[in-house]
Length: 122
Image (cartoon, rainbow, N blue to C red; front, side, top):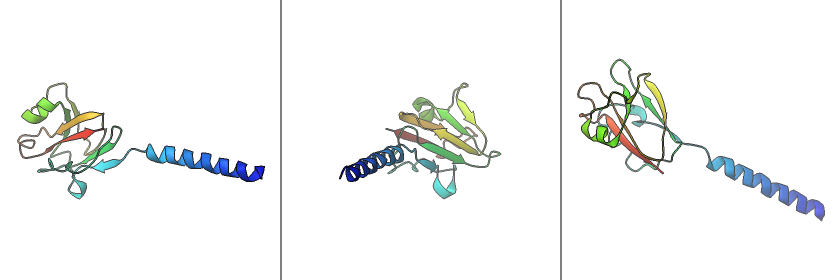
């Protein structure tokens, strides 16, 4: 009988370990899905739930675009500050922080054409 209880206890511990690690994995999202980081992508986050630690991947042609991490004010005005983090790989990976995360493309006219997103991570 003690052997049965020990096995049940070990099974319960194993289940708790699996549940702990499976709930802690961050999700990864490709911005714009199959279209990638491009024009009119500003509505892409609508209906999605993001968490701090999730990763956004910005896929684009680096000769034509970039990804710039900006403040909410810079997002609204489509004007990045000089110290804004600018990525240019064409396959940028950004881990979301808790709260509002804002991104724009600073090539002329791109942000104004909807090449910008804001993501709220809980």
